[in-house]
Length: 166
Image (cartoon, rainbow, N blue to C red):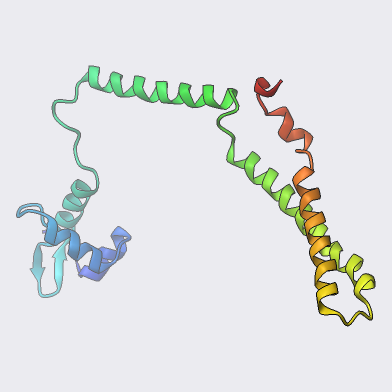
């Protein structure tokens, strides 16, 4: 017998919780169990890791041959090519580009609405008619939203568009 460790020590070495190891052990058939008791509260380290590795990395099907591997490789290459074509046609956009564009849109909206207070304060100063104040604020907000909707895309976003609209 090799080294002997507790369930908690084995779990720590495997990087999972003792409860998760217990669940895995219950699901495994006899002969593949993780825990081989060697002493009270102690388990064989070699058996544990041999069976845990077998659980984590199941063997490939025995009937996997070179043709099957080549077919899988070709399928992955075709998928990659399809994604590249979609990107070139403008149907697929990089996440970084989307984040940058939405960041710019959010920044424009934020600046526009933060500036609204400076414009509205003098307009409603001293007014007591709530309906009139509400109407002024409503018109200002609607105007700013319309301006945002008409804001052209930044130049870097236009560079990536396909020629479909021309």
